[in-house]
Length: 214
Image (cartoon, rainbow, N blue to C red; front, side, top):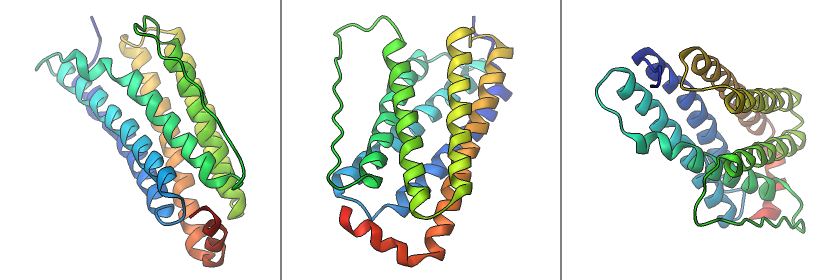
């Protein structure tokens, strides 16, 4: 039995909101500064990750309040989150990388997946791609604060993933730890997005850098 509570579910929305706001800022900044296919991947990636976060928080709220148990809201979390993070990270790599840079991603999807390990690997790859993409972005805008913030996001995100892989997240104490780490990680991501957005507005001349990616 899962040791979820109503308060746990409601506070989980905070982490989701932080992530969605950060994603929205990145999407707004890169709206007309990237190729259409890369922007669509970025938009879709942040949407999937935010959507499954919302589903997970809703599941905890409904389960914790004793209203109902909808396993689908919980079961889709790992799959769609890993796909969304990979899409967002890959698009940032392409948008902020060199025009002649080539990055090929190969994946093998078995008919039946009985382990979360492929999705855990995808989460790590996606988070790493986000880290590299945002650091490239920050270097172009000369923002050390954004570099530190997104580095903090990556470290905390990996710590949360390690905790989740080693401990039972159905336990109340473990879940609170995981939620706290995830909220802190998303706060760091939001800080990097806000800082980069501010830097871009202060240095409009740097926008010309992105013209080669249109």
